[in-house]
Image 1 (cartoon, rainbow, N blue to C red):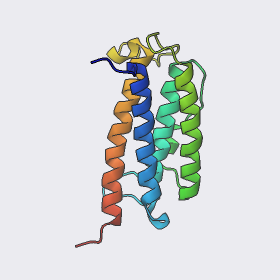
Image 2: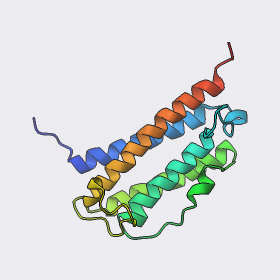
Image 3: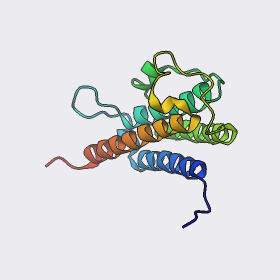
Image 4: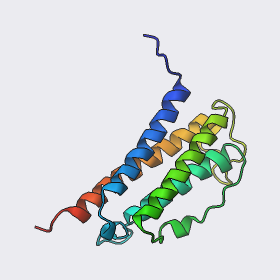
Length: 157
């Protein structure tokens, strides 16, 4: 069966859908909980998860694939505190810029700026492979966000 969509279009759609789902989960969390973490070491707040995903997306789509450096402070992503409106605005701006990066990406070409130490990863051979890595990260953090939301919003039993 022939598909009217190319694999590149399917990947772009999946990336944007997963990011939209992540931001929808953030939007569903009460304001007073968006900066809360779970009571275990290494837990991240919903705001931190969204901020981290924004950093991941732009690093790989722009800095790596296109060679257009987008400054990123990865450590700060995991300590960020902001209100829900600001986090959703960051997500909106990131989504627009990410979609623009996707439209400029030659999927079967090699990334322009492979990060040192990562250039031999099997998925680094094409820009599409790099974006599959981004999809992997978004799916992982979407699950993380859903579990965090459920734990933060469920009454203690």
